[in-house]
Length: 165
Image (cartoon, rainbow, N blue to C red; front, top):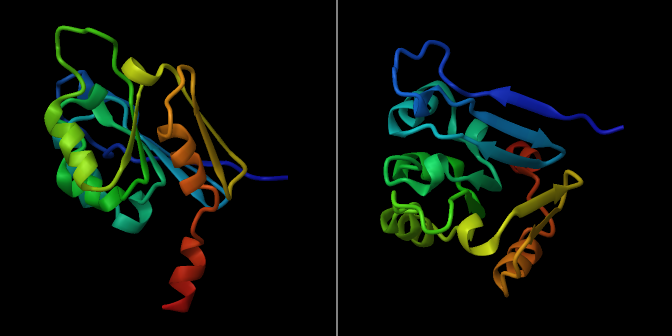
């Protein structure tokens, strides 16, 4: 039987008053794969998470992009620590706040992250057996979801990499 581990990454004592920064932050670990779910946490909380966790602890194959793709989350240093292969942005279609921001989209593209968006691709479904990911979209996302799924067909063995060093 497989085990599932989740770890709370939100700073132990957060004095921030913003509701977005009160979001639950989870890193899901199953087998050799990790998925990071930072909720609506913004850059202040990301900085605290970075100060309390190593890049190795944060590294995740899938990152749910913070705060609906706002320019105030998923900062470059946070993205560099997580090093996701796939970024999922949960954003409503035609919303006045303009999420996802062009800045975050450019940031993700420059980092080589495959982007899936609920405003464009519909619901994004992520399945894993601990070694592979299968990612599908409710609305057909030609090439993107299939390429993401095939690119992630086999996850790297991070533990083995560390043992070899």
